[in-house]
Image (tube, rainbow, N blue to C red; front, side, top):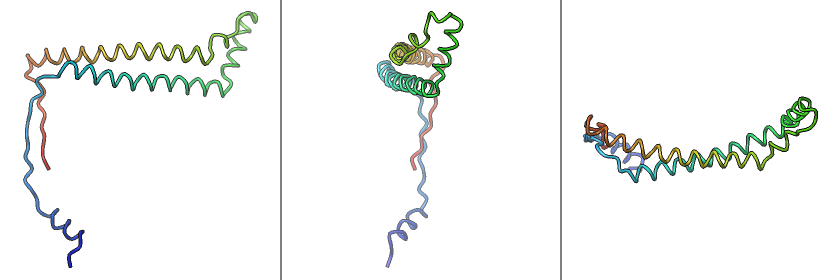
Length: 134
């Protein structure tokens, strides 16, 4: 009687010839590059907002903001409080502004890189990529 493991071992002993194909990447679709860079920028924006939140929570839990507030009050004779400028709503607003700016910049950068690649292909002939089938 033959088991499944024996059949798989028999199949793996036969070597099939792998075909190799070499292709040139001569065009990057502009709108596909824009969509892909937009998705990457959305992921970066989410990471930015979450990291700002986590960093603020860690700094707040360690009491560093309170100590910096005391130091700031000693320099300003108690007139201005640092906690009025550095609170969770202010930190999240700054994080949102940075995330939106990064969203725009990364999306435009993806479009520009696709355009530059399409222009450079006319001079260089494209990127040579090799594929094999196993």
